[in-house]
Image 1 (spheres, rainbow, N blue to C red):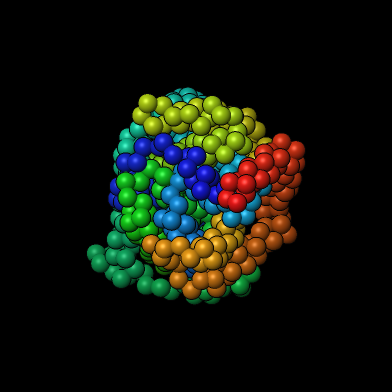
Image 2 (spheres, helix red, strand yellow):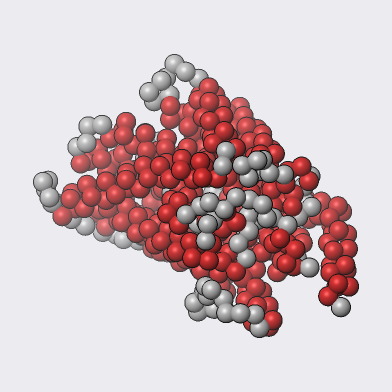
Length: 467
């Protein structure tokens, strides 16, 4: 049965180089969560948030190892959704792809509204919806063209964010060690309650925020179906991207906490980027304007990358007969335009909900919060089955092998399960379960009523062929 799962998604144009794959991954992972949301993580843990990012980075690295091994062996646009179907069954593949699609659609809807809000900094007289719609149309057009066009735009979006973080690190290090300015040192690490002002419980709560700074590393596996040479480009791009993310995040957070006391940079509600506060402390007059541009670019980059991801998920669902067949058709340049149209309509709806009723959008965001970790857990479980079946079949040597298997994967599953449980019992994150669990129940009902019989027929036919 299973090779057909990979063959059915062929047809996408392969044109992505390693450098573009890396920048697409950085573009998807470095978003407003780092530039803006990091203040919430700091509020939970204080300076101990560095440990929170260590834990989150460990989970991301485990994901990178597992996903790159499967993506190189079986490069496909459906990526983790196809692997879940192939190794865990039809329900897992169905739920994984639809949940990921919904999660990203909602997240991009929020980014679209954020773009409009950021633009009002310079043009306060123009309504938010005008910018939201305008930039949305532009990015939809970009995604409707060839994958090379999309990758080029995302490359430069991501480059702006990388340059901003590097500049931040350079200015920050100069301030910490005293180049051209009095050294601030590391005293702020131990002031205001010490390194762990809220104990390890605060560190663990901050993990819930930090882990979403790494959500997006999976985009490179999705692009494997359109990479020029997936066997070499995908693992190199994933290793490079995750390494850069860890360096950027750790250095940025370490500098931020050294320069500005955590009680000033942390916040329960986001009013200003903690990055702006650091630049203000350094004395950079145009900090607010420059960071507004960077955060605007970050939002546009996330919109662009996640629109790409949602389009490929719907394309994969269609090729798997879990969505209308028309959504699996490709344009002349190899782009799944019909799938793009559906994802665009979903994003517009999410943006409208976010604009009309912010509280309603907060509840919808629960799917995004819950969904990302649900998909990561299924991916790690898929890898456990993948390696077992590969070794049982005695196939040729894997081009890429995740180290310390299966220990790392088991640790990753346990950590993700612990995070999900914490979300369920925490009043700050409980909404993710209130929305996420009913969503999974709904998908389960739909699958077993509508699609389960199709899978049984396919299994039966493949068994007859094999025998």
